[in-house]
Length: 266
Image (cartoon, rainbow, N blue to C red; front, side, top):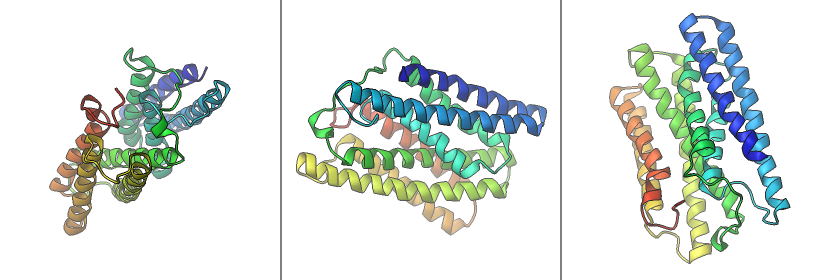
């Protein structure tokens, strides 16, 4: 049942994107407002689907948060992107923001729901994941991922949309808020992961591919903060760093699954 609801959410996010796109091409505010409320409805349905999956895991005798496998990480990643979009951009009546953000949520959900390589079954936790650190670590990491994705999207969007380094004060503000939020959350994710690794495996850091690339991602966005403060502007080099950071986030999440390591979903 939960997978059916979450599959429906995929198309709700697609509809939201279409409405945002229509608001930009037709220059009508009503389409933009409709897109935002459809996105909100999809978000609520998304949360309900994850909650139902959690309940169903208890009925199956497993009883764990839906944060343990590749399918669940995809749907939570998508939920995190929409959540932060609603937090930071809800009051900004700009359909162009939704045009850039909603495809991210849609593609994550589409991959989770319709890719034959993604197993959506609820399965028991392996011993190392049976810890209260699971929820704290995964939530902080994926909210950090989502904030970094939005930061990079806002940075690239600013350059493409406005054509000048300082175009769009509203987007600038959201970019800075997302960057700060992402840095704090991702730092907490690395710290909690380190503590959890010590509890589970007896060491704080093991240079596992996921750990290594998470650290690389953290350094890239640290550099982005430094450049942003130094330039006091959304400079070209700042946006380039954000683009590299986005690639690092995607590799940290997707790419390391093809490398041997303790964090691989494969």
